[in-house]
Every structure is written in C-alpha cells, then in structure tokens.
Image 1: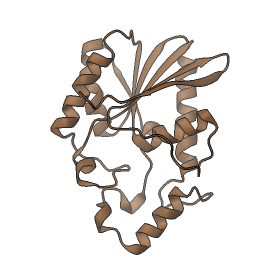
Image 2: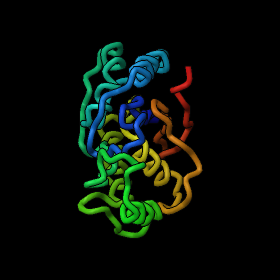
Image 3: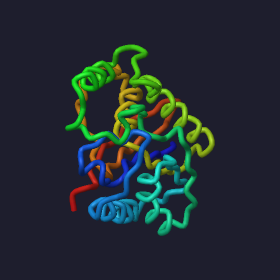
Length: 200
C-alpha cells in the first residue's frame, strides 16, 4: 500500500489580505511559519520516504522545516501548482469588478471548458494533479510520500478520487496546513482522512 499525504501550504500574506493567489506568490505570515513548523510534529511518527512540492515559493517555504528534519530532498513540480486565474492572480477579492465576479461564478460553477483569460479550467487542474500523483505512486509504490500543494488543487483532486462531479457544491474545506491522507491499494485511491493542522 502506498500512503500519500497532501498538504496545503501555510497561511500567506495574500491569504490574510483576501487575494486570489493562483500562480502568483506571497510570503508566509508569522502564523504560516508556525504552521510549517507544526508539520514537523504532525509527521514525527510517520516514516516518510519522499517529498514532493509545488514549485511556488509559499509551498517550498512551507515544506522546508519538514525536509530539514526528515533529511529528505524536495522534488518540485509545476504540475502541483494552484489553479491559474490569469490576470486575477494576485488581485484582492474586494476590488473585483462585476464582470470579474461573473467570470468567477462561471468558473466555479464547473462550466465545461470555461477559463478566465488564459487561465485554467477546473477540469484541467483536476487532471494535471491526478496524473501527477499517479506518476508519483508508480515511481514510489509502497512508500509514504508527502506532497505540498494548494487548497483548490487538493479539493479538485479529492473530488476526482471520490467521484464527485466538478460542479458539485464543496462539502469540505482545506485549511492552511491541512493534511489529507490518501492510500493507494488494489489499483485505486482511497481517502483516509482530512485533518486540520492549523489549530495549535
């Protein structure tokens, strides 16, 4: 059995300010740094063999303490990034125009093939994440692997695993530093748990 732990990065300045991050980036807040350190305690008794990470700075910084303690190199990959909102990446939610709000409503309704500008559709995000974790499982079958990624990316991946339609209302939240435990057994992925790690 392969164990895969999906981790959302710690709180960032853009999270605090209510901005869409997407492929843009911002530093961890003081709380975000504490959350990253707390991941070390969470994984203290879990013998990880591999660390994978989105190539965005907020993810790399969040994984650094765990990498140092476990003495494992971090393998970064752009396919583990958050969704791209194109020109809305980095924009404050409170400053959106009505046209931008309508575009976001269309995107999050799961409208087939809808993207903002040159950004991504929800289905594209879902499939690039799903293909990547399958590649990771093939390369490291039977091992325990941590993957540092992003909130919406994790939601879309879990929907794929649980066979929840892309446009179905979200019934769970992925908080900063949350850990989602997946296992791969008998040819399929199973969701074992979703645990908050931001409360300490």
